[in-house]
Length: 305
Image 1 (cartoon, rainbow, N blue to C red):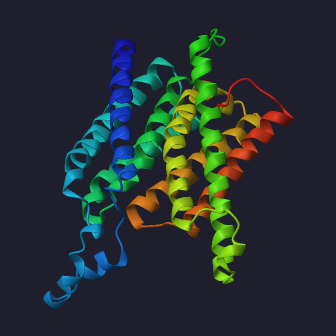
Image 2: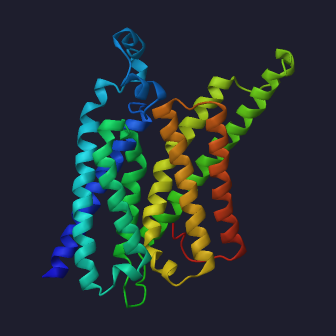
């Protein structure tokens, strides 16, 4: 009975987390959410004569975002409820003590993070952080699911392996294009600051064009990398063995995902564009390159995150 309930709670949490993550991504990709600015906090104590500074439509979440913004946190909360149920039941089914398991501890940490987010999101206007919270909860849920299997790894479906590999390769390819666009942006910006003549600019595109290219390549590559991270949790149990290569791949893989997510989130929610977005993109690309280097030095089966 506990095993059946554990499986049901896992499937429900998986579906709710996936739906919530998709809605959060759509909100951020459409620039419909934002993080609080200094003006927001100043506005709490401002008098009536200051109110005219806060009527800029671009500074508030669009009313068109209301449906997704309403349903995404609800789905996230339902996913966390299923996640908590699964972790509790799985600790008995798999006979794994949560205190001695890294992935169970990460699951509990993600549940605490989701709880704080759901409580604080309205007061501090941090809806956009759902872009990070949702997929992390999903990844830690899957990591816990694949943990504690006493039998040998079953033979994986070619479709599963192909989806995992292609998602990572296509995601990294798009990040390479985003990194190249970011590098060109920095070069073009430096030329403009040095006040060089237009005829000496070569054939580099305008700054706005390069900035939009960075954003579009990242927006296209982020869901693919998220899919790679999620499918890579199948090999999560290897991290419990303390293998250095597996741990380093996981660290750089999650760092890549986190940096790209932050670039997208801060662009949509806090208006970060141009040079700051370019530097963040290049930093994320450097982490992705580190993952590839580890693979080339000591190849292993699967990305594992």
